[in-house]
Length: 134
Image (tube, rainbow, N blue to C red; front, side):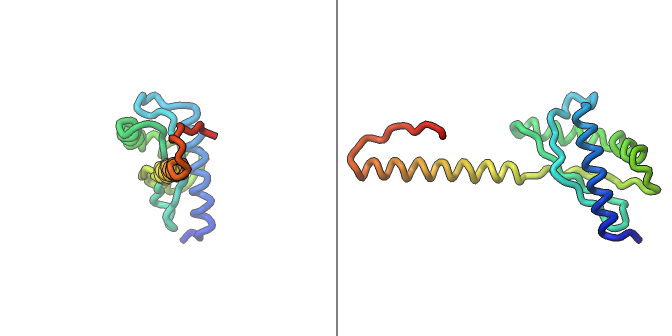
């Protein structure tokens, strides 16, 4: 049985290997600029959940997800060759929505700031002028 420290170390190595693989590029045109945001490996080192994100709309996200699923075997084989593990973890890819949530929060904060600015100008009696980004 492996220790949690070992599974964390293996997860980090898998994340680094996948990131390097995506920087070099894959032949699948569906897989574009993918960012590996994290990886968690089960304590028995048989399962690895890889968290990823990509910039673009919903179609780009779905296409990239399909490309990653199609490349699972190739990526797993590369991990096995580089890390030399007795058992290579089975990869499952999960889209990381943290960046999307952060963008949405930032958008809401900008809208609230703009709304407050308009209310303050209306209270002063001045017409609302568009604000420039800082």
